[in-house]
Length: 524
Image 1: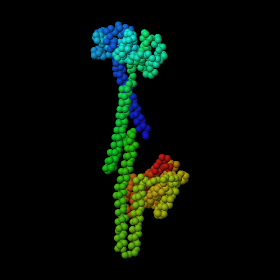
Image 2: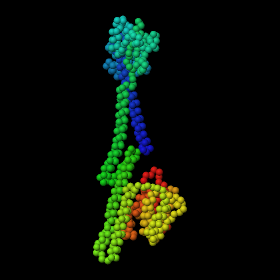
Image 3: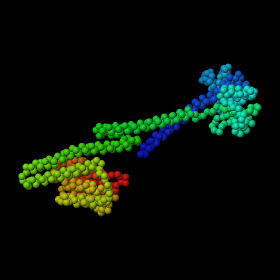
C-alpha cells in the first residue's frame, strides 16, 4: 500500500471519528439539557403540589420559608414571562434558573403562585421532603403515624420505613450524626442516591427513601448514542464500500467491453484509491493481451504470406521432377526442394522463437557467464559461414576484466548472432563487433560498411515481419523476425536494442545494452 493511499484512508477514518465524537457531544449535551430541565420539574412536583394544596403553606411550614424562600404571592407581584405564566396556568410545576440555583413555582388552587428557591436542587428538595415528613409524623400520635406515613409516601413519592430492628439501622457514622441533628441525608455505598434518616421526638428512627438524582447517563441517552455511532459508522462503511464497488464495476465494465472485442478499452486507474493498483494491473494485462492479439494477427497474416513462396517453389519443383528426364536436372530440382524445406524449417524456428518471447518470454535462468566469450564464439561461427567477409571483434582490456555478467548465454548468443548475420547480408566487405563492459552495463555494437538504415526506419526495423526491401531471395532475404527477436531478448534481460549509423564503417550500427548485474528484486 502506498503512503499516499494510507494517509488518505487515515484522514478519512480520523474525519469519521471526529464527526462521531462531535455528534455524540452535541447529542449528549442537547438531550441532557432537555432531560435535566424535565427532571428539575418532575422531581420536586410532589412536594410543590403538597405545599400548594395546603391553605397557608408559608405559615404551616414557616421553616421552609426561612431555609428555601417559600413564598405565596399573587401573579401580578411576580415578574413572569408569558411562557412561564401560561405553563403555570396549565397547572404545571415550572423550574426557572435563578442567579443562584433554581426557582420552583406552581399555581395554588387560590390562584396565587407558590415559589421556593434551591441552590442545589436535589439536596435541597430531598431535605425539604424529609423535613415535611418529620413535621407531619411529629404532629400525630403514635397510633396515627402509620396512616400518616402511608399518606405522605403516596403523595410525596417517597418510601417511609420504621427502623425498629438492629439490622435495619444505617452505618455508625450516620447514627452518630442523627444524635446531633434530627434529619440526616446519607447515601449508599455507591451512586448519588440519598436516603433521609429522621429522629422523632420520642427517639423513633424513620428512614425515608428518596427518588434518584438526575443521571446524564440514562439508558435513553446511551441507546441514542449507540444508535448514532452505529448509524454514522454504517453510513461511512456504506460510502466506502460504494466507492470500491463503483471502481470494481468500472473494471467489470471494461472487462466486458474487452470480451466483446473492444481491445482498446481501459480502466481509469486514478490515484489514491483502493483499486488503483488493480486498475493499473488490469490495464497492463489489457495492453499485453491487445499486443498479443495484434501479434497473433500479424503472425497469421505474415506466416501465410511467408509460407506461400517456399511452398510454391516446392510444388513447382515436384512438378518439374515428374517431367524431368535428365539426371543432372533432377538432382538440381532435388537440391532446390531440400533448400526450400530448410528455409521452411528456419522460418518455423524463427516464428516459434518469436512467439515464445512475445507471449511472456521463456523462463530465463540468468547465470554468471562471460559475454566476451559469447561474442568471440559468434564471430568465429560467422567467419565460417561467411568466408568472403571480414568479420572482426573489438574487445579492450577493461572489458575483459569485467566480462562476467548475469545473462542467459543461449539467448544472448542468439541476439548477437542475429545482428551479425543481418549485418553480413548487407555489408560490402566488413563487419565489426565491438564489446564494451563496465561495472554497471554491458554493450555490444555490430557495425557494417553496407548502405545503412534510413533514420526514419530505425524503429521500423524491429517490427515483426518488417523488411526495408522487398527482396526474398535466398541470399539477401530474411523473414523480418530476427531483429524483433533481438529486441525481445534484450527486454527480458532488462535492456534495450536500437540502431544508429556507424561512424567508423559508414553503414548501420546495431547496439545491445543491458545491466551487467540483475536487480535483487527482479523476477524473470
